[in-house]
Image 1 (spheres, one colour):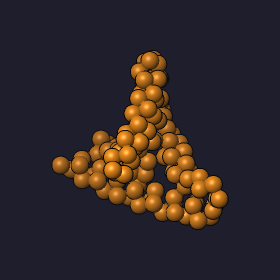
Image 2 (cartoon, one colour):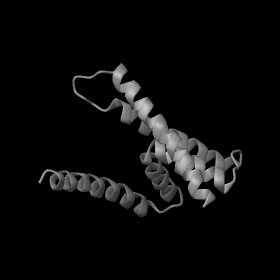
Image 3 (tube, one colour):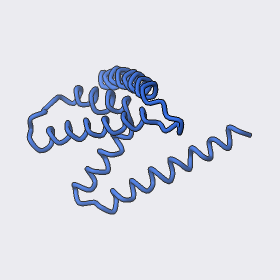
Length: 127
């Protein structure tokens, strides 16, 4: 139960940060194209952070934290900030562990099924 509360608390913080950063960036970079610069920035920053923290934890032992802290930070806070970071981290971990086929499958399935689900959902919602 403690881990669930830690993930939830981290998720609240990450989601709130995502909202605030996205809102500020979109206001600063008003683009006639409507390109989602705020979402792009959040995804790239989230991926960078989870990569740095994951690399420190696994390669250097510098960032050794408890499982509760890891759940709060990785799953909750960064997961709430952007689930794209979790997707990126999982894919890189698969590749790093030598399972290139699974890494490629993860990318393909996440993109194809994710975008397909949005399209189907949109069509269902428009009925």
